[in-house]
Length: 533
Image (cartoon, rainbow, N blue to C red; front, side, top):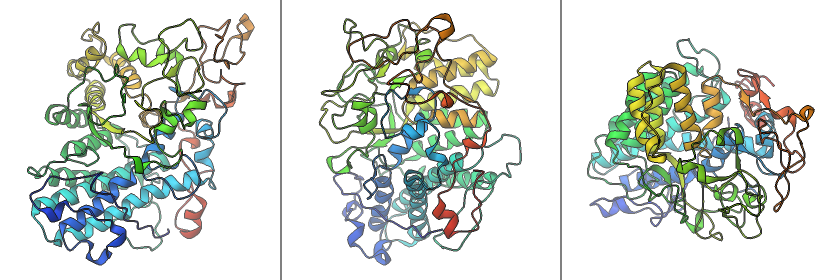
C-alpha cells in the first residue's frame, strides 16, 4: 500500500481550544513545522489533531467534483439507498445512485475516498505513537490522543462497512475486512478479518472514551472537535452495527443523558441556515463552515442545499414518496419536502436558488441563509441519532417499554400529536426505523443501515401502465404530472427516467454490497485480495 502520511493544518480561526496555556492554543500550519518537532509539545500535537478535523471536509487537489472529504462520502451513503431520490440526469452522484461507481476499480472517486480514510489512519497513528512524551499537561495529552484514537476507529468503521462484508452477530466473522495498520510502516499486508477490524475499532474507542473522560478543564469551543460524548456516540454506532443491541442502547443513553445536548424547537422551522448551523443545541459533532473551506462543487451544500452554485440547483434532491406519505400531517418534518412543488398553485413554495429546477417531493432540509455562500456547517452526529440508537437497541433486545420511552421524546417533539407507543416486537422496531429514516434523511446513514440489517435495496414499484397510469417523466417546473399511480414510487420518474429500471432493486447479501478496492491498492500491495468483481 502506498505510504499516505498527510498532516493537514487548520487555522486558529477555524478550530480553537480553551486552555490556560497559550502555547497549547497555537495552531500554526503544520506545513511550516518540521514533523520531527511537531510532537515535542502538546501544542504541536494539537496542530496534528486539527489536521484530522480538516480531513473531514478538505477537498481533493484534483479537478474532480464531489471529492470534498467525509462530507461527500455522506452523500454517497444516501444516494445508494432508496430514501433520497435523484431527479435529473446530471453527472455528480448519478453513478453512485446507479450502484456502478463503487464497483469500478478505476474510479477516481472510489480511490479518493478509500485513500481519505487511510489518511485519517496514518495521521492518527502518528499522533497516537508520539504524543505520550510531548511536553504539556496530562490532560492535554489525553485530549489529543483520545481524539486521534476516535478518528482511527471512525476511519476503520467506515472502511470495513463498505469494503468488507457485513458484520454478522453471533458468528465468527472471519470474512475479509480491510487492511489494519496501527503504525505507519509501508510493508505489504493482507486484509484482516471483519472480526479483527471490529476488535481494533472497539479497542480504540474504549481507550478514547477512557482518556476523554479525564478531560474536565479543557472545553471545546467548536463542535468539530471530539469529546467523550462523541466518542461514546461512535461506540454506540459500532455496537448497533454489530448487533450488540443492549450495549448499543445503554451507550447511546449515556450520550442522551450526559452530553447536555437538547432538542431545539426551530430545528426544522427556521429558514436561516436550517440544518446548516452547528450552534443548534442538537448537534454533538459537526463541521464549522468557513469561507476558505469550500472547493468548487466539492462541499456538502453544493449537492444538498439551496446553494446557487450547485448540482442541487440543477438536480433537486427528493424524498422517496412512499416514505413521505407515511409521515403524519402534524409532524413538522413533513414540511421539509414538497410533494406538489411543480404545481404553480400549491403553497408553500420550496426555497430554490436563483434559476433552480423544481421537482415534486424536492427537499428543503439543508438551507443556507445566503444562497451565494461558499459553504455551511455540516452535521456529523446529532442528539436525535443517539435517541434513535437507544430506542432501536432496546427494541431489538426485547426491552419494549424502554424502547418506547426512548423514542417518545424525539417523536413527540417533532409531532405534538404523537403518543407513547404501545407496540412490541417487529411493529415497534418498524416504527423506530421509520422515525430514523425521516429524522436522519440526507445525513449519510441509509446504505449502511440496509447493509447492517441485511435488507435489500427496494426503491418501490414502477407505475402500473397496464392499469392506464402514466409513466411519463416529471420534467416541468410549471406543470404537475398527470395520471400518477398512487401506489407507485417516484424513483426513476424524473427527466426521461435517468436512473433506469435495472437499478430499482438489489438483493441483500449480493456481492455488489461490497465496494471494490482501487486498482492501485491491489497493484502496489499484492497481499490485498480484491473483492469479487
